[in-house]
Amino acid sequence: MAVTGAAATTRFRKAIRRREGDATVDGAEGLNPVIGRILSNRQVRSVDQLAFSNRDLLPPTGMSNVETAASLVAEHVRQASRIIVLGDYDADGATSCALAVRALRAMGAADPAYLVPDRFKLGYGLSAPLVDLAARGSPDLLITVDNGIAGIDGARRARELGIALVITDHHLPGETLPEADAIVNPNLAGDGFGSKYLAGVGVVFYLLSMVRRRLDATGWFRRDARAVNMADYLDLVALGTYADLVPLDANNRILVAQGVKRINAGRCVPGITALAEISGRRPGRIVASDLGFQLAPRLNAAGRLDDMGLGIECLLADEPGQAKRLAEQLDAINVERRTLERQMQREAVGVLDADDGDASCAGLCVFHPHWHQGVVGLVASRLKERRSLPAVAFARGDDGELKGSARSVSGVHIRDVLCEVETRAPGILLRFGGHAMAAGMSIRESDFPRFREVFLGVLDGHRETIDAAKEIVTDGPLTDEFDDLAFISQLRTLAPWGQGFPEPLFDNEFRVLEQALVGDVHLKMMLQADGSRHRVEAICFRYLEHAGAPCPELDRIHAAYRLDINEFAGRIRPQLVIEYFNPL
Image 1 (cartoon, rainbow, N blue to C red):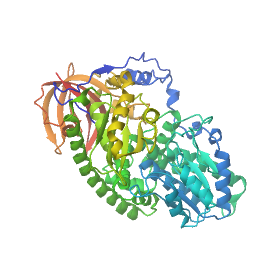
Image 2: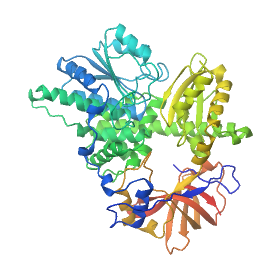
Image 3: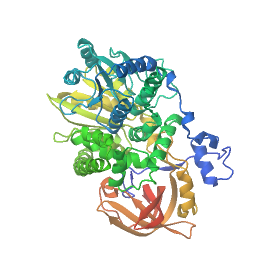
Image 4: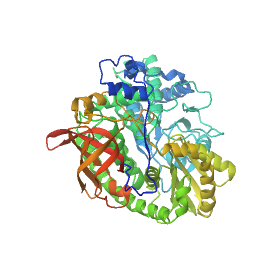
């Protein structure tokens, strides 16, 4: 997503700094030297580290309680028990839910069902009212996906009702754990699993892999020659993992790379194909970032404005026509979401611009009485991008409460920040949870001024880290590689890029030969780099939204950009996607 320099006089002009790598990577001798520089900048010392084989995935056995949980789930499958999956209303939750239902069904479970809380009535996660609602379906076993680690009351209610409970989650646990029959979470204290960055869909994937192993050991699958291959669900794992912005460590990169490979081979659920097509993406040429920036927003829109059940049904659909119809509904909701988000973003910027004091703060904290609580996370994200500061946005909930969503910058763990807020002002947070880059919370509306004061005070202690995050860090300049389709294709073979393994970002000084606003908000340019004989197309997405003013006539710019391939009207040509620029 482009975050651009609007004008040379902006208060928030950023410095562009280049990483310094030694470009020493074993096995990279036959590659373009720029590739070696990129890999070195990401601490890759050998191209062997980029192998993305299923055989290199960490085994599930190292995860705390996974064997206990798998034995319990397997027994309920064998007993034809009533199983209900309790999901969440974002893309990670939707893919987790769809994976669980599909895999359990394939393993022979007796018509597994799912339930997602209405975020506007029941709120987030494993609550007592949600368990009461689930109890109407007479379940023998509840399995949470992408939630539950903070569900103290919900777990207690399940125990009172005599319903077995398995919690699968990846969010950081609090001091007290829910009283479940088993909790599977790589972030539990003492957990020995080698990756702490699984998304919720990754955790349930590992649990069900162990369930499959348990059932196979009993001869269960020989009853009717049923075969279950957990690799068949990697398309869903890839979508949920990338969408949740978890760091792409080695294990997550394998999960995402293998999932993207299956999607491009047409071996994915019809819902993913339909979402790709409605997003204008060509099956066979999908890259990981398409999952996060094209498919996931359409899933998330349902959970933000409507009912995530629509997104889950799209992922559960087996008939392409049905999947297409559901994807079209999700796309329409996403258009509505974008309109609402733009309005809220303009109001948020107005609030900040009216408060000159915010220019010196280490973070941003905003509230508007008319905002939609399903979209405040996006507002916080846009503000974070615009100012390169941790941000939290609040909307009104029920009973005098505000519902807030926070987004952070690299190096500032936002859930830890909220823990410190709670320490400094006990009781001010009614509920909160999350992870390093994103968190949610509830406060009393009357406590908003006090929360804002304490939140910004805590962030002030992280000012050095926050200031460092304001820099645009690149992999250095290119010469003529930005006009080389073969080089761009070579870069794509190194994907997936993402959190913790950032997509290559380059910087050059350019002459601006042409410029025009397209689609009302995007800035399109024709550029020529200093010392290059080639002209290259460039686009700065959502320029007008981020700049807040029309672009001045540009002569020369210093731009940080990604390389992309523009496929339009049968033509394939290189394109620079500008993340940020400073006029010269």
